[in-house]
Image 1 (cartoon, rainbow, N blue to C red):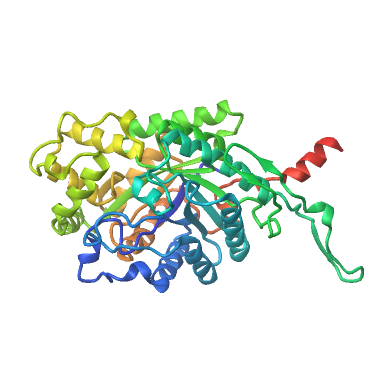
Image 2: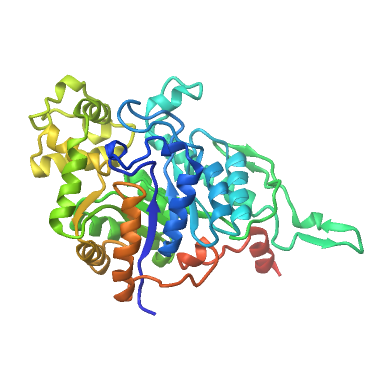
Amino acid sequence: MSRQLHLNAFLMSTGHHEASWRLPESDPFANTSVAHYQGLAQLAERGKFDSIFFADSPVLIGTVGRRPAGSLEPTVLLTAIAAATSRIGLIATASTTYNDPYNLARRFASVDHVSGGRAGWNVVTTAGPDAARNFNLADQPAHAERYDRAAEFLEVAYKLWDSWQDDAAIADKAEGVWAVQERVQPIDHVGRHFQVRGPLNLPRSPQGHPLIVQAGSSEDGKGLAARYAEAVFTAQQTLEDAQDFYRDLKARTVALGRDPETIKILPGIVPVIGSTVEEAQRLERQLDELIRPEYARLQLAKTLRVAPEDLPLDQQLPADLPDEDEIEGAKSRYTLIVTLARREKLTVRELIGRLGGGRGHRTFTGTPEQVADAIQHWFDAGAADGFNIMPPVLPSGLAVFVDEVIPILQARGLFRTEYTGTTLRDHYGLPRPTGRTAALQEVTA
């Protein structure tokens, strides 16, 4: 079978464009509507998407006047979506900086059980001092420290997921034995960041381990992804940058002894779609004209670590911005934004417009055929294994993608017409991990 695309639907309230909530047809309170997200998941499942995805942060982000603020806790939301769907993968973001391994391992294993093997965890380290102040800290831990903690966090989670052997629960009614105690063991982890006794208070889940996703593109982020991630969400503006990232991450994966096919790289794309180019451009202009630049400038200033008054709307970015090495927050997004602005000589107002649709992810405006061409071009050119689809407006942007772009990709043999498996690992063509206890027994047998 020829290589096929993997598509993930990144769902965000009324859409990724920050002004989408101001359109007449948008529900400005959709961000807390379970029915809204269940409907979007069903729509994505009708399109045979591999998965849906929710970003998350343990802090209220930005100015509440700018766009619908506040979000439901995503693993809770996924359990509601699991009941309304049957095949599509369910991925949620959770922070390794502001959680403990036991709670998160249990939470994602629970979603995997509830959904019949469709759970994925987007592992983030959470940038910014505001989140730290919600957790009894004066400031965020250093970038390298957060990633060191994340690596050990994942190791503990793997041990907990494997603390039950697959055949631990035998439910022998005649003998009165529900599970074999010897097949459920403590993990006794002692490390730099964590001491965890275990075992998990939940049997091994249908996938063994929920799918691990990573979204950082800094050096530390790529190192973590190469070691642990099975899917990577990334923001890339140009084909050349995307190809470089793809080659680099695949090479890092091979260097660590992993099969490069076991990590799927999915750049984000914000498709603004119209039946004609002119119609698509009208929608894009309509959305951009609804951006409140004063809100957007505040957020840009915070990202760039400068004062808002240092960013006059009709001038280019100042020359004396901080170096990336000085940034302890979202390093890769900082670099992407500055590089975009410098490369295209954008004014602050123009940059705000470019970021309004997808916060640095690539925006593509055109007809369904042109969107399919753009996706195929990057796929064939070694820049992506698939895409993180980020509709600018929801639900209409997802509906037009499912109804008009997916059939083109299917007709070209690039995307499935039916699901062939039942788990998220099946969709991504990834094996179910062997439990560590079972693997050890096989080695010593």
